[in-house]
Image (cartoon, rainbow, N blue to C red; front, side):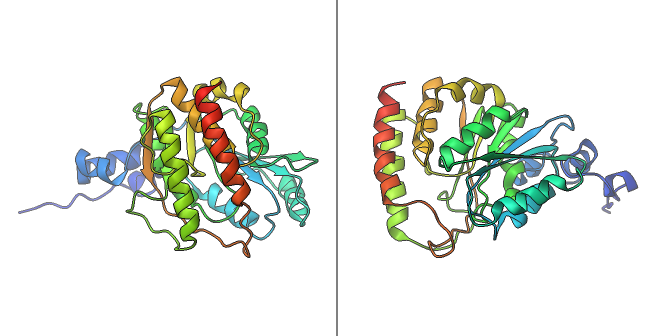
Length: 280
């Protein structure tokens, strides 16, 4: 005869990734299944800094902010407006006046001129106070619901930096531009050659850092636009820290829907791979 484990009231009401929540699933499913499903405990005092570069994203800003807030982790959300001209700043001004929600501190920083994604990220990184820092784009291409999976190797002491890969194959992604995919593979392969990392998606938005690792890299960052991706990858490799890569979903957008990256950014990425791999 088998017995069914009935969860207690405390376990039913437990916050995801809390001790009570994790203990219930560990007793019910076992340690091995929990590891496979990404069920683990996130310390209640851990603070995650979510740095969001924002440029002309009035159509998606509210949605992405809500998705970030829904992630059951204590967070500071740093929105860096990089000189938006489409009404995004009006939305950010409204956000600044809204009541602070428990577990979700929102901070807004304004650039008077557009500097590029790299410039906005440097500003956000300098303001981050969290134990772990993650990059989140302001569109809806990447899903914040995947934060807990990406944090797991760092929280469990296995990794110092985590990359989320769109190309590992077991999560869905929108089918769009083959030439973009091919260019990404060329850039990732060249980056791997110089860095000796075996990444599948160097250009990914989702890069997660232990705060002390990012603090060491931050003063050396120079690139203002999408050259940031190969630059920071080269500098992570130079530190010889532990790097993990996890699959993520991806809902890419078209240029008509607001995609910003262009062929000039690909050329600059080639330069940055060589430049920052060979020189500090």
